[in-house]
Length: 113
Image 1 (tube, rainbow, N blue to C red):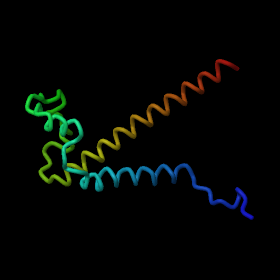
Image 2 (image 1 turned 45 degrees about the vertical axis):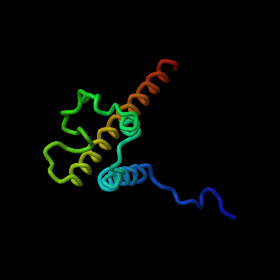
Image 3 (image 1 turned 180 degrees about the horizontal axis):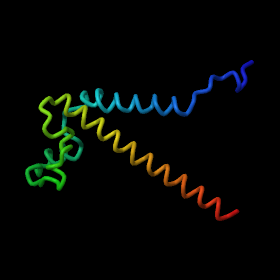
């Protein structure tokens, strides 16, 4: 009979490192194989005939516009770099939010003591 102590434990650090590695591989490599077809909104606009009236967004000239890195000529490398940069920025924002929540919770517990 198996008990909870028989289950191998995975450290939080190892879980985070493996999770980050998987995210970066998906963002940097697998993202290149995503569909090249237009997204849903672009498809509907083309189907209904109003895709020509769209204006560029305010971020159209940004370094990461159109799922690529401006100035990188290789489409595969450009898309992979954009994916990695996006994953890292998203991770940093999430880390900051989690840290903020933990600090607020800790502060809340101190005021109730």
